[in-house]
Amino acid sequence: MRFGAVSAITWFMTAGIIACVPKSPESAATIASGGSTTTASGGATKSSGGAPSSNGGNASAGGVASGGTGPSGGLIAAGGSSSGGASSGGASSGAGNAALGGTLAAGGSPQTSGNCTDTPPPNQTPTCPDWAAWNTCSADWFKTYCDKSCGRCSGTSPSSAGGAANAGGAGARGGAGGSNNNGGANGSAGGSNGSAGGSSNVGGSASPGSTNPPITGSNGFATRYWDCCKPSCSWTTSVPSCGKDGTTRITDKNAKSGCDSGGSAFECYDFSPWFDASTNLSYGFAAHNGVACGSCFMLQFTGEGNSGANAGASALKGQQMIVQAINIGGIDSNQFDILIPGGGVGAMTNGCSAQWGSSTDFGSTYGGLLSECKNDASCMKGKCDSVFGKFPALLAGCNWFTGWYSSADNPKVIYKKVSCPSQITSKSGISG
Image (tube, rainbow, N blue to C red):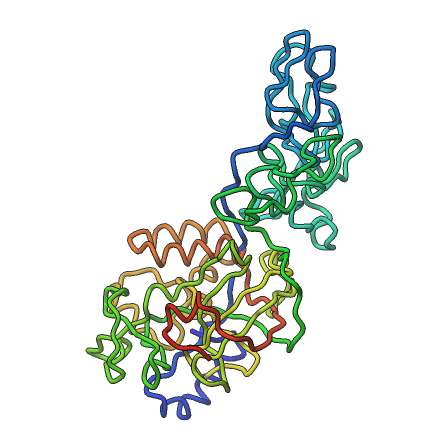
């Protein structure tokens, strides 16, 4: 499970070595997803934002005061509270509509009435405003997509100038929609970098482009797998395995792996990856080589794919993740084979069949459900729901892959060893 196409050979060459650790994990190559999350309901308003004009409630410079009314009776909507306000921002609900129908483009500039449209990249779930907020517009591969949101049309400004073009100027990493001190006044910096940035529940999407300090380190790449097997580190350390239900902890180091005939010890479901808005980091577990069990590493995604360019890897640029090695051996020395539900069972095909039944859709042996979907992100999202709908923890991990991880395929990383945070050690019971 833990291999790319190159590392599959490494697995079989090293199988004899790994056997000394009673069941080392296998590798599954390829990877994947990008930060689809729920934005806050739009546009927290500000008293400084966009006073109505005297001719009937027109919004000045694209942001409006909450409930502002014009003398002609035009009640001004609460949306569009800063630069990058929603496309509906500043619309007058009564008399005195703003120019061109009362709508304002991102950044408070009037839109043109021409044929400028948004055409997103194929086979991707993020919207054009999402891509623009992630600063993807300037990328060479993206220059033929999302013209409207990227401000390539006369009279428009890119959505990234101050928040996604969803309701009310939720910032690229905004708090509850547009909560900026200068929200809405003359299109200034509305909704950016709010206090609850990147939360999957409030204000703005958990989008790539980390606000954490960049790191320096070694060059590597990430793949993905989920083989249901007992982690190799469970044989020698306090890393737990779990019963067939995926949740009951097994602390007996000698418990037979579920990947062996009659075994009862499997991967724990809560070893699925997740995103923590409070740190703006994702966390998870992985197979790595040449380190002690429990070693932790910070990964910073470069925006490149190790198996070729792909939109998911590009969307991850700048994002960071901390992983802990709980499987050792069988992969390249600079490879991190991340445990992701649906990532591929690899060489150990028996474990998931024993745990979930042989009729379960495991996807391609190497690459899992995304490879089976031929890297189609919409197909992958449907697979998450159909395969893991009865397993909430696994579904959450699969949705993390299609959301925060952007269904990225084998992204390149810069990595360095770090102290293990409590978010990880509270699950694994071991610190590196």
